[in-house]
Amino acid sequence: MTLGTLLPLCFVSEIFVVGDRPLPGWLATVADVFPLRHLLQAVLTATDPAVDGTGVAAGHLGILLVWTAPALVLLWLRRSAPT
Image (tube, rainbow, N blue to C red; front, side):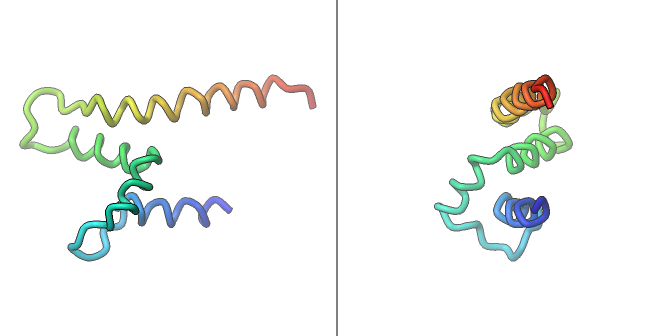
């Protein structure tokens, strides 16, 4: 189940670059909803030698925080639930 969702999301998020044409607009919009594309862009910005300063991509890290906070709350609630 994990690979069935992760691999398509990787292709949509352009983790695996296929070809030299950009994604269709609607597919890029779908990819922008998920955190994987933002993680990729944050890492690429931070490691780009042409970027001045720290290379922190605040917008991309903000999206990652928006996904991480509810995930941690859900994890905490699930862990504290009686079994």
